[in-house]
Amino acid sequence: MKYSDVLEDTEIQAVVVATPPMSHGTLVLRALDAGKHVLVEKPLSLDLAEAEQMRGQAENLGRTLMVGHLLLYHPAFRAVKDLLDSGGIGKLQYIYSNRLSLGKVRREENALWSFAPHDVSMILSLTGEMPGSVFASGGHYLSRDVADTTLSHLTFREGLQAHIFVSWLHPYKEHRLVVVGEQGMVAFDDGRGGDEKVLLYRHGLGWDGGIPVVSRAEAEPVLYSDAEPLLLECQAFLECIRHGTQPRSDAEEGIRVLRVLDACQRAMSGGMRVSL
Image (cartoon, rainbow, N blue to C red; front, side, top):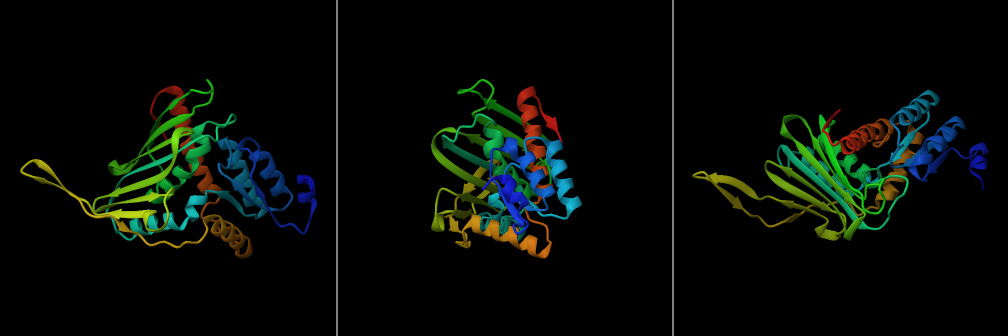
């Protein structure tokens, strides 16, 4: 069945767009114009103006536009956010996220745009705010115009900082988020399972006569549901359509992520810190 046939079928109320990001704008706008609700894979777009057009079209037509920021629906990430929101590790101080693997090389977009949307989305969810400025650098090894590795540094208010390291030139797969608070640290390692996926560390750091003292504690497993993240994401999409509610990863959330990615790209291209 052709895409045009899907859009012309009045019995089909919603579509999923899972194509290269360069085509998202055209396909999503066509679907919205046809009266469909849309779940589009990340990133929402590679262009901010196009993303804002998509959001406006969805709002004008009263249709759900949801972005596939899958990890916002991951029970393990939800457990990390719940722990932070409940004060379980105290005031948030620092976040880092690594998304590394060997392969999945892209020609259309670099590693930042291909891998980092998930990490930016999680960090913005945890902080509840946009960074004030970003700095980023990248390495080009397979193609002069496409960065294979990027390191992005995000600075927020009150000294809060985060960094994101992504690469498709890494000897092994690593998807790890570490959140550091005043009273504890929590690590979400998506490469592990069971009790090792989310671990809480209540290490103590202090001073004794001007000498730093570290008190190490055993890792504590953090409980989380074993529900399939993709299933939860799809269920959330259907529920938003049924009840007219906003998705956790709505177009506005997708645009916030794009603003950070765009600023990181400009910082990487210009070799300078960029304010948001």
